[in-house]
Image 1: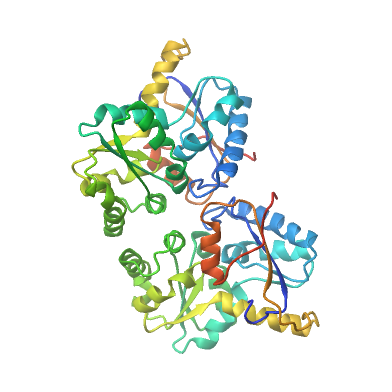
Image 2: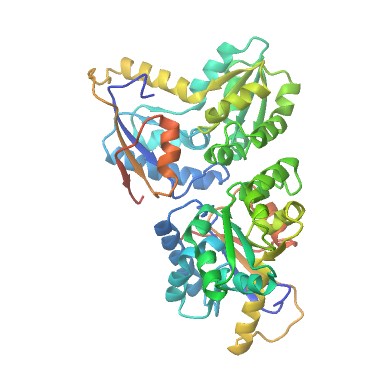
Length: 244
Length: 244
């Protein structure tokens, strides 16, 4: 997102006091998503990106109602990219328990490309493995082999990484499924955000300053900065602890 | 606890909307522990058991101040059992990142038995592995081998399972460390609870009814009942969703 839209100002809000969302109920995820959106609205944003697949799958409507401005989730951009990429019309989706159970990816794929077979599977250990930093650990390979076995059997040629953490494990996933094109929903979301800002005349004037990101979090655990910097690839300077 | 004290009434409060606590900051864990205790006090309990090692390690003082009645955590009972069990005075402790970083077990062991070597290590993947139900999975063995390698090298003859979930993995842990006696803090806590209730004259009159447990939770994810029943070993009937 930042590399594609470097002149924008970013307000990042991470609900670190209550993560992970992937195993929680629909009601709780929707309630939390509403609170998060209200905070962003109070901070005068012009667009909301639900950068969490679980929130996108279960609560994007609540986000949009609450924000009343352009809102993007992860589902639609990834689904569009996957339907373009597939040749044999067999698409795999991996995500948290809540995302997969919501059928958000499966339903949208069926609407957009009805002749496509969709195979979805939850991978609950991938988030803790990524947070542990075990990106190429033998245990990660063993677990990926097991989670992805049915998708391999089904011969899916395209695989949606339906969780923010999964791209950190993409080397392992690509080794286990060498025949599949991996769809990173984060990259696809950034492209859609760019299009919408252009269409709506909302793009910031170009500048050549360093990325302007303000991070708000609801808890600062010992490992926050190291995990966040691993995601972003550069040091995080402005981090502010808030209550929702 | 229930098998040792079957005639008591239990109010169980699980903060399922905000778990896991093990990777959160001290401040957040203490704030959450206070809210949980206030709920139990409003429900007129006679004793509070902090059945979570992370809360016990970081917030038992807040629980006790808030409750103003007998309060038990997991640290002291497990430490006493471990100091009795060790022969070579080398004790291992495993737990969440927050529990191990708090040094609660390490400090209390050093106070109680200063000539003992303590080796502590965090095992962040054990909770998600237990929740996935992978009690004897090859990946669980591989991960346990790695986490416990240094404790084996140190020749610890006693190992405190310093997290509620770890006893579910005790077969794997025992296979990886066959020479070590495993200390299950849950069992030790129950014995201390019995002693305190007896000493304070607070024991419930004996009855022969089925266990009386009322469960309150802050979120009811799809997997709650199956995971909780795996813990308890019998069906859960009264589950009520609350907000704190």
